[in-house]
Image 1 (tube, helix red, strand yellow):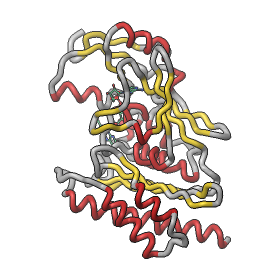
Image 2 (cartoon, helix red, strand yellow):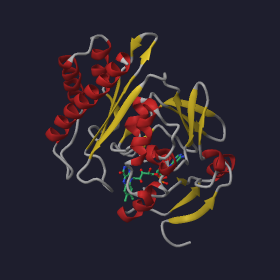
Image 3 (cartoon, rainbow, N blue to C red):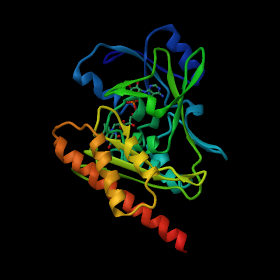
Length: 290
Ligand SMILES: Cc1cc2nc3c(=O)[nH]c(=O)nc-3n(C[C@H](O)[C@H](O)[C@H](O)COP(=O)(O)OP(=O)(O)OC[C@H]3O[C@@H](n4cnc5c(N)ncnc54)[C@H](O)[C@@H]3O)c2cc1C
């Protein structure tokens, strides 16, 4: 075979893919929307294992405790899933903003996470939903909180022989709410300059605010100090929300690049975080007064 691939094998099951990974080092391909762009920038040919047609890795399952999403589930299926409602809607909002319709019918959730771009549109929503990962190898399946998965741009906790098999989200409480906002230079086909996702939930009667940021640090991240401030500062008035937004901006470490300056990105973290928090808090207050 010519091109970047030494060999190309379409796996029919997760076990088959894991077995093939034992035989020789190989790259996993799912939608290929990131991987197939890589050779343009140089690199040696490699073996690939295609998991895009592995049925057990495709689909969204709901039960009382969690939502389990196969790594090869396409963005279009996530964006169009009506059952991703309440705070879970933030994931559908993120998936709906990936590339174009064509890209979303090809691109997978697992590929978005494993490519480990700081601006990945599903990463901030999943971090704010406290998602964790199931990572399989021929010898074991391990579980890892998503916030421990990203090491740096293009770098993850995945080890040789491992495949991300599922993304798992604990079922949020019915009253939980959230929003993901992506700021980009144009409406479609552009990566985020800044992505902010906020999820508000009450656990055991106490507030559990979660703020996740994309494109403003080497990895997608949680603004944990801002979250802690909110946890201990009820009731939430405008000054409290402003302070939390400033703390989120302070926690970010953006770079200057073609999409925006570091100073602009930091200011947009503050602006978007404050806006989303204000909007979510007013929704919660309106709901309580109905
Ligand atoms: C025109 C265009 C626009 C885009 N716009 C956006 C955008 O707006 N927002 C955004 O977030 N992204 C965007 N992307 C990037 C890309 O579409 C997404 O990151 C997509 O989700 C990647 O999924 P994939 O299935 O195509 O991954 P692939 O290209 O198949 O794989 C990506 C990487 O992950 C690894 N991998 C994939 N699946 C697994 C697995 N299950 N286990 C282990 N490793 C795995 C591969 O080996 C590879 O290193 C865009 C891409 C293009 C080409």
